[in-house]
Image (cartoon, rainbow, N blue to C red; front, side):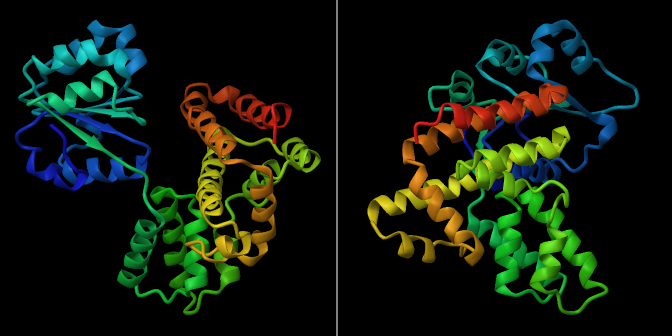
Length: 330
């Protein structure tokens, strides 16, 4: 069966097997927390597809074993692909009366076998989690600000939406910083927000990404050489690339429809900051739509690779950036 994320409450007492797929990790987490709130760390078990396939017997013994101290279990399985299909078929036929199993996957195409299995299944629920639109993020921010009685200008709101890189988890973290500041300061300035949302003073992620997309090789290499980012920093770099590339893709599509760069940039929502307009103009002159699409696909596959190989995160990120210059046909 197929369902929207906000309809899961109708099924949670009937179904025990779920597939959550899509790029919106923040919304997946919120959905799990709000619909399965009676589960805690003690009765929640987290696995990865690769580990389960390598140790099937251990997985089934752990999941199906009864405990005097547990009456229910929540099992979360991440990075699920079509390789897991045979196991899902076995699981769906087993007794899940005391177990809820949620499979977590990135984007799955329509031809995906595991997605097709869940969409046709009467015992499982398939739930897509699409990326948040800018308007959705603005609504989340406005609701938070209203509930906490925080005065916030439109300029500040636009900045915090941009700094969240399209991720509602980042957005909520930044909003919590704003909330803490508001307790000691009635009026929050643009400069205050700028300082609060500057994720790393010594490592300007946005500057790195902008220089790379502008094909400023020397400046890009200087930033890489002057900083030793953590695996978390490198994931932030990838998310920033994705955010800026997806914005660039929307602008490029609009530019194809309306061959007026000034108008396309000035009418973009959320508004582009004046200091970024020249940078974006340069990027639009450099990048063609097909090149942007290919770069987005390439970067989308790297986050899970970094999480699996954190010690290689710098090498993975640096290679991706350097390949952008070496393979550039733009």
